[in-house]
Length: 497
Image 1 (tube, rainbow, N blue to C red):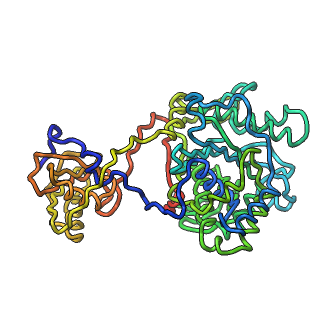
Image 2 (cartoon, rainbow, N blue to C red):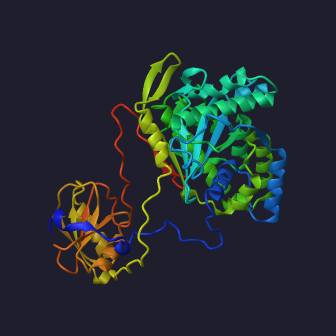
Image 3 (tube, rainbow, N blue to C red):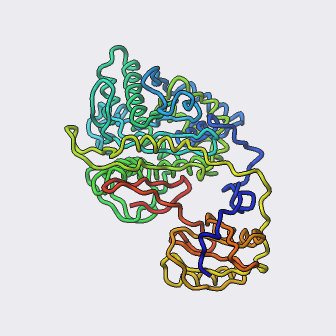
């Protein structure tokens, strides 16, 4: 039976089997305690600062890190505000994670091995990631900010973003520490201006630390869809899954030539960080005190954080980190351009760029508090499957899968083409619809009183991935000639270009 839009309406929240559903059940031993707790867990995962939170050994490791880690006066007192107003600032937590292109500490032999060029050091910030923790502390988003983003640098005019740190450093007076802090503050002011967010904390890791940490944790697994060969960065990798560390890891995250865009390089960095997070949280490292101390000691000599970041809070929250709570994203709506600074990326709509960052704090509408519907036994559910996906034979395949799962299912033929997989049932048949929804996670559920009582209709859309698999998330429209946003979780090990 064809869908009748006039007789459909959304299933009430208290009847929707998807309402209030979580990807993993609450763990009473490790409660969520808000944004500060989550930012602590996320930063700890990325920087490997603490590994046994709550234990005497974890407390000791935190003391080791606290005693040796670098501190800098990085957070500016002006030019770092939230575009949504002072009332909004503080509702979310934003930490700027920076990978400096400094060669400090490298021997001439290491500089040659790692294809770094001048071992005396450079001031470029070639990796910049905004770690955003929403107000409810439920997740964390790592948003890569391109080094070639063409921005307005306060007091210096327009140029590439990765030059901001060096400009602040070079024009500052005082000690080396004061010059480093001035560079960090100008970088934060620049990023705050272009993104519209207030940056609360700052963490920087140098090149040598990155190389050493990747080796200590036993390497990081990555997965390439295609082989790559870039003599300039030293990136020579076969297609498929492989474990990389040291010089190979550095080449992997620094490759630019042979890729479609700077965005592809960002995805490489994100995939490497995701693998590092999985390794830090693996039993191999959590049960190895020797490796734990090696990581902490390396972090202590390689990482600099702002003066307000409390490492003991990091230690207290580390044990609750879950990779599927952490997403990695790139900025949408950027286009290639040429300016006096060379090849750059520009936002076609600067206001839309700020809206993208503001959306990270968007609070989903709360569902009405009410009991969930208990799903019916599949043996009691009759399902008619219609194909609106455009994939030949999809309805018959889905019907066979539902039959194998215990349903009385059959193919009803084709429906009008649709992007959205939809489950419909008449009023009173909510338990039947709930049973089918459990087999198609993420499908829309509606009430359709034109359907015969006792029958559930499943219309497959182009977002369908088959019975037992979640539907695909909708893809936002991207302006012509610009790069779309990419998103993946730290749990995702699928191949990248």
